[in-house]
Image (cartoon, rainbow over all chains, first blue to last red; front, top):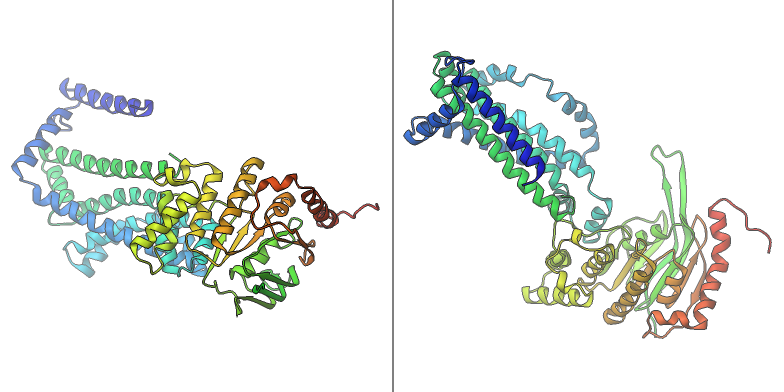
Length: 250
Length: 268
C-alpha cells in the first residue's frame, strides 16, 4: 500500500472512529446522528429487505442516464467547438462562469416544461455534468501534439476519423478527468432535484426521512450515496492511472 | 534509365500573417526533380525552409506559386496516395502498443487480415521491434519510438518516403545505426527517399544526391552527387570521398549559415 493511501485510510478510519465515540458517549445525541456502525447495519437491513430498492434504482438509473448523456454530448460538443474557433471564443467565457450560476434555480421552470417525471431531474444533472466534460475535453484536445494531427493528414483521415482515432485517444486522460467530475455532478444533480421536488428517488427519501426525524433511513441512504460516488470515482481513477501508466506518466 | 518521381517547378511558399499585412517569404522559387528510387537529402541552414519544402511535397501545404507534381500529377495541398512521412517529433500513438501503432495505417487499407498481419510482422522484424510488439511507446527509448514511426510508414509500402530530420533527437551513435537501417530499408523497399537533415555527415553517408539550400528564402544552391554504390553502410565514413563531400557541403553552408544568423562571412 502506498504511503498516501495508508494515510488516507487511517484518516478516514480515524474520523469514523471519532464519530462512533462521540455518538456512543452521547456527545452527539441520537436525534442528530446515529453512530456509524448503526448506519452500516441499517443500510445492510435496508438493502436486504429491498424496501428502498425502487428509490435507489431510480436515482442511480437517472444519474447514469444523465452521465452518459453528458459524456456523449460533452465530448461531441468539445470536438465541434475545437473545430469552430469563433463559436469557442464566444462560449469560452460562459463556460468559465457556468458554475457560478445556481442551476437548481431553473428546476421549477423545467418542471413546468417537462412535468414532475424523471426528465427535469435528468436534465438538471445533465446541465451540471456536461460543462465539466466539455471544458476538460477541450483542454485535452488543445494538448494533442500537432505532429499527430499531421500524421492523421498524411494518413488521409477525415475530421471525424481524426477526432475518433487520434484526438480523443490522445486527450483521453483529460476526458477521464471530466468524466470523474461528471459522475459527482450527475449524482448531485439528480439527488438535489429529487430533494427539492420529486415523487421518488434517494433524494426524496432522504428529504422525507429528514422531515420525519427518521435517522434510520436518512443516514444509511447518505452512506450509500457516498459509497456509490466514491466507488465509481475510484474505478475511474484506477482506469485513469492505467491510461497514464501506459503513456509513461503514471 | 531514371525517371522523374517528384517534380517542382518554380515552387514558392510565402506565409501571410493574419490580417494580410506582413508576409514571410519562406521558400523558392525552386526547381527540383527527384528520380524514382533515389535517396535524396536536403541540407541547409536553420529556418531556410527545408521542412516547408517537405510539406509542399507531402501535400501538407500548398505552394504560393509554381507547381509540385508526384508521379506526373499535381499535389496542390492534397495528400497523394503512396506517400509516407516520418517527422522529427515523436509521432507514436502513446495509447497503442507497438504492434497496433505499426498496424494503424494498414488497418485502413483494403487488405486481407493475413496480409495485414504479414506486413506488420515483417515491419516489426525489419525494425528489430519483434520482442517489443506488445510494449507501449512510453516503455521504449527515443530511438526505438522513432523506429516505430518509421515502421508505421514503411508498412504502408509508400512509393515516396519523406523524412523530416527523423534522427534529430538521437545521439550520434544511434543516428549512425539508424542511418544504416534506413539504407537497408530503402534498398529493400525500392521507394524514393527524401530526407531533410541538418547533419552534413548524415546526408553524405545516406544520400545519392544532396541538395544544398540557401538561407531564407530557401533556394537550391547546388546538388552534390555522392556517387556511392546502392549497397552501402555507415563504414563509408572511412572513405576519403566522404570527407570531400562533407567539406564541399560545408563550403556552401558556412556562408549561408552565417547569413541566417545575421552575420556576414569574413573574407577568406
